[in-house]
Length: 263
Image 1: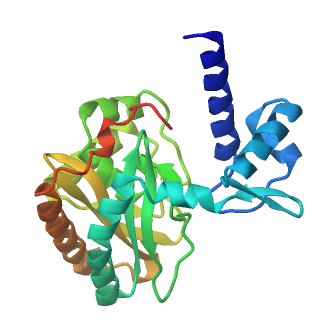
Image 2: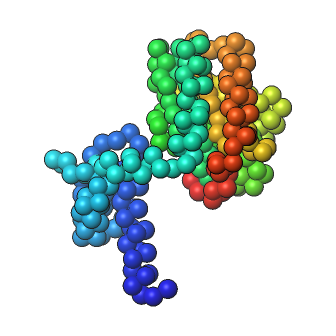
């Protein structure tokens, strides 16, 4: 690789660093905030931000920058998002209509679950999930459903580090996690009892193609209204239907092929 090529590669990496400084919950970042989050020199961040403005990937606000519509347009090109989401959405809507509880669709990226779709229930609960946000696999029902049907190398990567926690109820014991994943593989149902947010529970099921979970769906509700016995079969029915439909297609690349240790 020539010096010019290396220079362009480094600038591309730094531009991505600037974009990754933003969070899924939105909001404007000032230039000093971008400098703190990226660790890059102020002059470099300013030059990159101006280039990203010209490309439509950032928008200028009164007090700084925010992601631009160009990022949204690029996101719509992602095959996993467009194909999977478009196929799953009618089923998610049916599940929502049957329960009026919050419904999620998630995919695995490294050791995290990324939320690809969310339909908020009538009695919306306070959960840390937003479309595009990532959470640890081990702290959510949808994440555990994905982890149970990922390859053994993924579980090995999870167990090589301390289990991440979002609440005091999040799993801390690797032996308990391994046993729970074994039960999920047997029943094709995963549960989260206040492990991602206090006062919230969910039941989830994997969407399986060729033996691997390419996605998972979940139903989230307050612990005061939890009824996994009633809702579990409904979630399973949707996951089985989507697994059957997507198994007949070859356009979806399972997220498990992504870099295992990415977090």
